[in-house]
Amino acid sequence: MTCSQDHRCVPARTRFWKFWNALMVAGILACPAGLFAHPMGNFSISHYAGIHVGQGFIELHYLIDMAEIPTFQEFQQNDLVAQADDPRVRSYLSNQAEAFRKGLFLTLNGKP
Image 1 (spheres, rainbow, N blue to C red):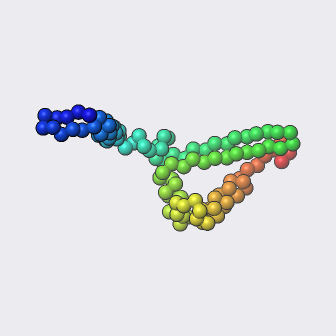
Image 2: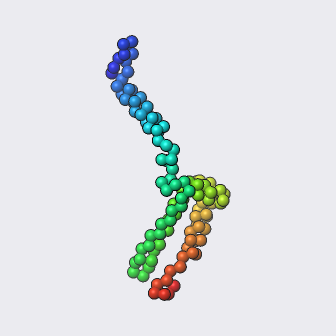
Image 3: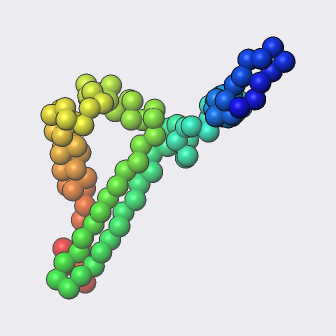
């Protein structure tokens, strides 16, 4: 505990937390807003296809990572709410998965 000349005493713990809070606020204010955006840009849509070939089967995992703006546009166009338990979200995802599945075509040794 330290005391000022007017005999007001401040515990070391309080000084530490005041300093820590001031440091955190300064750090947040010093960071540009762009640092908190999507790493590939606010408009990006990244695609990933993982293919696993096993004996007698082929498995495909297809992932789409949509940044903020394409996601917002997709929600607006399909009248969706950003809640995972919204039944419209499940229906939308199911329809999207089916559309992607229909676009796949696999041949092996020239045979479908």
